[in-house]
Amino acid sequence: MRLYSKHQVAGMVLVAAALASGATLALEASGILDVSKRGADSGTESLQLLTNSPADETVPSMWSAADNASFTQDELQNVTVYKNAKDAVVNITTETVGINWFLEPVPQEGGSGSGSIIDTRGYVLTNSHVISNATKIFVSLADGSQYEGTVVGVDKENDIAVLKFDPPKSMTLTTIPFGDSSNLVVGQKVLAIGNPFGFDRTLTTGIVSALGRPIKTQNNTIIKNMIQTDTAINPGNSGGPLLDTSGRMIGINTMIYSNSGDSAGIGFSIPVNTAKRVVSELIQFGKVRRGSIDAELVQLNSSIANYARLSTDKGLLVSQVSRGGFAEKAGLKGGAEGVRYGTGRNSSVIYLGGDIVTSIAGQKVETLTDYYSALESRKPGETVEITVLRGKQQIGLKLTLAERAN
Image (tube, rainbow, N blue to C red; front, side, top):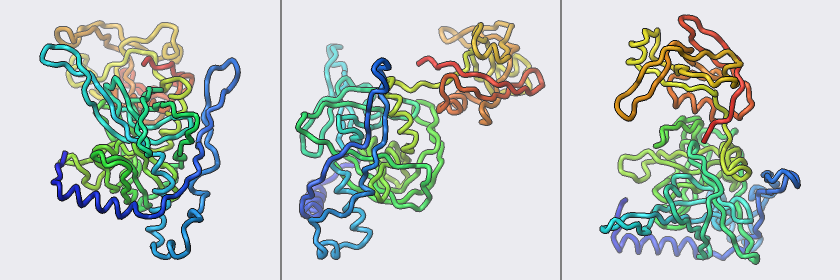
C-alpha cells in the first residue's frame, strides 16, 4: 500500500472539499429489485428489475440554467451519475479471528472493500474476496451510519457475494439499477465509485479497454467475459460498481493488473449480466446451482499418459461413472484397471482404460479448470453434447447434467 505525507493528504482533503461545495441534492430513493414470493408454498423468492432508473431521470430541477452552463457536457454527465449513485455505494469492513502470543483466538481487523445497494430492504452486492474469512461484516452508508451485515450467499467461482443489513423502517435506501453488459463496446465511457485506500465514495472515469477477457482467479477458476477498463481501480474499490453514463451498473470492479499493487490502468470488472444470474440464485437458494457430470474425472498429465500409453496427455480421464446416473445412461465409460496415483497421504486409486473427455458444449477441455468453466452457467437437468476419446476413436455423447455438490 502506498503511503502519503500529511501535506499530500491535506491537499486531497482540500480538493474533496472543493468538489463537494455544490448544492446538496435531495434524491428520491427507489428500489431496482422486487423480491416477491413465487407462491405460498414455494418458499423461494424471485428478482425482477423495475423500470425506474437514473437513465430516466433528468438533471435535478434545483440546478439553474447558469449552473448547467458552468459545466461541459462531459462534466455534467459525471456530476449527474455521481449524485444519483453515490448514496447507494457502501463501505464494507470485516473482522476476522487471529491468534495471539498465548495461542488464543482474538478478533482482529480484516479487509475492506466496496459494495452496491441493489434492493431497498438492504441487499448489497460485492465481491466474495472482500468478505473472505470474516467473522463479522460491517456495512457503512453515505450518511455515516453503520450496520452489521449477514451473508446471504457466496459464489467464489465468479467472486460474487450478496450481503443483507437491516436499515431502520424510517430509512429509504438509494439503490443502483442493473444495466446490460451484453451490448458494451470498446471505447465506451464508464465510471467507477468505491472506497480506495479508505477514501469513501471516490469517483473515477475511463473507458472500456477490452471485452471478453477470461481471467483466472486466486482460486484457479476462470471468470469468463471480464470487462477490462482503464478506470482507476485501487485496493478498496473491490466490489464497487462500474457504471455507464446513464448511471446503470454494468460491472462489479474486482481486480487490477499491477506490479506495485496500485492502479496501472488495467482493471477488470465482472459483467453485470453474470451478476444478475448469480444474485438471483444466491437470494433464492443461498448458493448457485450448477450442472456436473456424475463421474469421477481425473486431469491427465504426462505421467498418467505415459504409464497408460495414451495418445494424449490433455483432457479428463473418466475414472469411474456413478451407477444408474445420467453419465452411465448417456454411455460414458469408466476405467477397469485400478492403480495408485500420487504419494503418501495425497495418493488415491484411479482407474485406467475409461473415456477421455476432450470437449463440453463445443468448448475444449484440457484441464479441470476448463471443465468448471464450460459448466459454470449450466444448470442441473440441462443436456449438453460432449466429445470423448475412446481408444483412438472420437465419440460424441448427449449427456444430462447432475447437480454439482458444493
